[in-house]
Image (cartoon, rainbow, N blue to C red):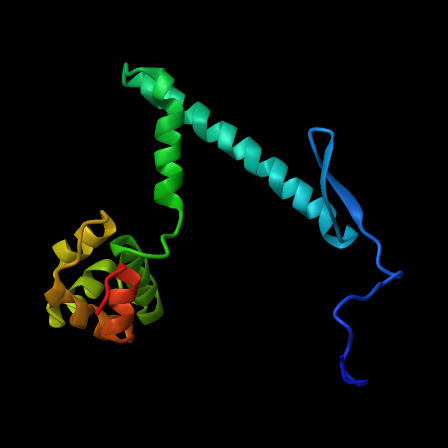
Length: 160
């Protein structure tokens, strides 16, 4: 039984109104009217941009005299590369790029900065390519990023 002053988990708010959000004539959910237009616009824009990317990939393949039927595969690869990774070596490369911006350093200045921690420009390039991080680089990377080596290993998906 609930104490008198504890709110009940289920309540009705008869003052709230929601509008249907539709996709191709089907109602897929309801949302606050303040966000409905922006949400629908964003979703439609995403579809348009996706089509444009696939068209650009088809044009690129056509100019290179390659098989244009692989345009979707190429577009998917670009989309995957554009997303911010949440784990693995590429995630660390993104974090290093953020650190560079925080410090206000040019790429060459940042490479020199990292080199003082024994992280080479090639090590950073390999992280950006998704290649494995050498165990001896975990501690220096943690110092550059200002996080613990355990956190770096966690981002890499390794156990300590």
